Image 1 (cartoon, helix red, strand yellow):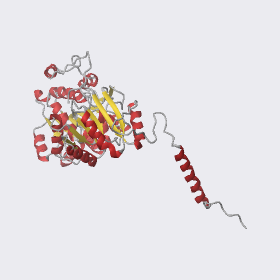
Image 2 (cartoon, one colour):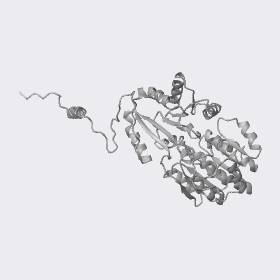
Image 3 (tube, helix red, strand yellow):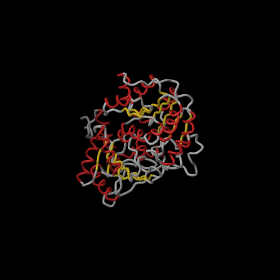
Length: 423
């Protein structure tokens, strides 16, 4: 999770990082910081509040992990990191585990679906870094099994996603019980009005650092679009999986859809797993770990579960369904093309989804190239063009005009046939 695209001709030297951490980075062969790391790490080390805007796969975790570990190694207090999903919380913990043990800094993961007794046991060992999802943390606060009075650093990771998932009440509850005199770092792929409300209400003169315009897709990703009828999606998916032999991440709009896609893939002989909110924590961890190690070549996921999928080397992200929330398109395709690798993102859209595609193109400020497969008929959007909607065909216009005329006659009490002249 620590790796990400490098910023050439720039090193970690001169960012205020302690020599011991620099040694660890050297052993891990991290020699060049990413743009978000280069901008955010010095501010974090100085103790400033930071709003960091960058796409997924740009090294945001290391951008706050280094300042936190350096801060905790020099003074008392604890760090609290809030993440939207269990998977992301686990991967943040894995990232800390590569540096924190050298400084005697313990971490704990507080997430739903995990054993409460195991979490209580870990809390008794006085961890300095608490990585949590908002719902389970509020549960601990209500039970009085966790004290946050000594939190000196707060991180809101993937803040836009947490708000999209409806965690604002839980976040406000947590903010009421931690000290106001603290450092706060907020990281997000997009900056919405709701995110700015949090920043203005709970942060002190935050420094805004942005390495890409909000809503833009990560560089190095080839984006393509297939216009395909709903009934042909399954066959096209299987055809494309014959073409792309590496790790593939398939996105479904619903968990029922993810389940059906996984069954289809397995019946076709593919090694596939699924990850969504109906799966238990152990099932999700097994699927994610199996995808990482190559036991599964294909992972089917929903948007809710996908934020924790931070894996280098995904060859293809395939949007089997266009996302319901347009901004999730950027988050989805950001799962490929990580750590400087090239990636590819393919989306399926039905002829009726031209408006949804147009919204995505407005967000990413570029047009999606439409690709055709030789084994499938050419399709077009029903009402879509890059400049204006397509005009209906003549016979459709004539039919609509006739319908309007008949409706007018009914409303005015006229008969459909010409009325008889009075005798």
